[in-house]
Length: 108
Length: 108
Image 1 (cartoon, each protein chain N blue to C red):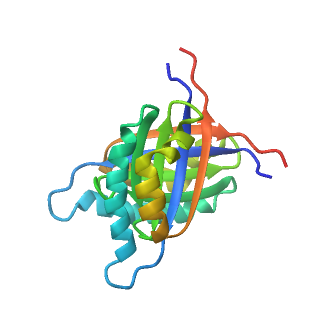
Image 2: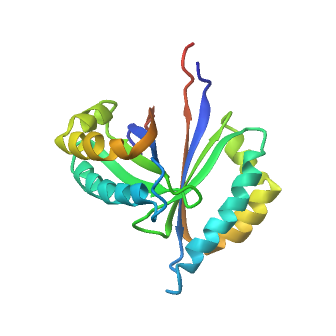
């Protein structure tokens, strides 16, 4: 038996680094680590993990799950997302693509 | 306007390496690179990319999209998945978790 949930798939594309060790990408790892811990403490958050392409290290994927359709909007309103997401990480990005959709629950 | 599609999220957890440079994880990157190229040529495949956790490098995520609900089963039946997936990559894994769900199309 599984309940319905909101699945979020976010693609973050870092601005290319200065050639000195993928600076933006490595900074993003650090900030996402802090954002992940804060997000997992949100009441509607079920899952938050982030990943990086081995072939294109400026390309990150964040997988998030929330217990209802409003969870993502509430996440974006938190102090930690305003500060770490919009304030710190987004300025390091060239672009981002975020999709979200409800996954139906299964019958018991 | 977007058509409905099957979204697949696969988590692959490599067997821990021998301490000598995350051997299984790095081998998996190599094999997934080959599998990705072959999978993108399948008629129903819309997207295939793989990612690795910076914090837990034995944890991989594969994001796949197919144009209908049968696309994943047909992918698993291909020669390249039988050989590279089941034959080569799966034996390097401790476990895997694969979820798939249809994402409804949007009205024009």
